[in-house]
Structures are given as C-alpha cells and as structure tokens.
Image 1 (cartoon, helix red, strand yellow):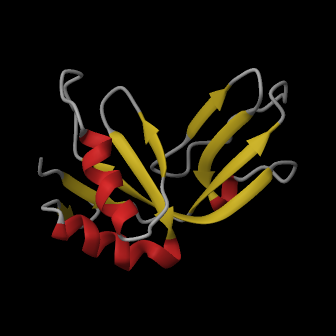
Image 2 (cartoon, helix red, strand yellow; image 1 turned 60 degrees about the vertical axis):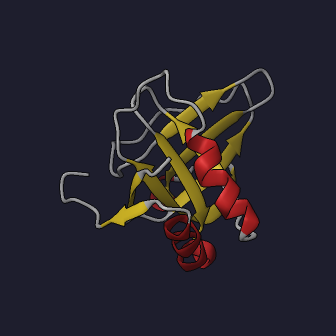
Length: 131
C-alpha cells in the first residue's frame, strides 16, 4: 500500500491531564488538535504554544498527515506506516480522525522517519497553504 503524506509545519506537544480536568479548547491555531478523554486520563495533541501549563507535556513532535479521506473498509493503513518506522527505530504517536490518520514522530527522528517511509513506497509532499 502506497500512501501520500504531508509533513505538517508545526511542532506539537502530547499532553496528559487528569481525567476530570476542566479543559477548554484554545482558539484553533494549528492544523492538528486532538482531545481524548478516558476514565484514566485526558490526552491532548496540540501545538506546543497551546500546551496547558498544568499538563504533563511531551514536546517536540512533528506530524505526517495521510492524504484522505480514507475509506473505512481499507485495512493496514497504520501498519504500513508504523512497521517501517519501527524497523528504523522511530517511535510514533498515532491519531485517527473520521477522514484520515496522523503519525507523529519526535522532531529529531523526522529525517530518518521520512527516509523510512519513502523507502517503504510512500510519497511525501510539501505542506499546502490551506492546511
């Protein structure tokens, strides 16, 4: 499976807050904002500038966006990205939306990640101004 990917221009943070935290979304300033609440935690992916100070913050992430929308019947999308990255020793944080998938890698791993994904047959395109 060959996918078209875009590297988003922002630096992202992956954050953890208490499950019951009263969190209000900041004004949309970046191309990716993801919030997931479970009984154990509230996880947030946002631009580093929007990371809440009271959170446990892991900064320095960059994101590959899979060009979508993707059909729900497709299988192996994340595996086709995660496997070559794992083989190259690159850790990931994945976010899925209704239309597509995002794979975040630490900024220090970005060149190696891009090389591994291209070697696996994926195409990486410049960021469009509308994203």
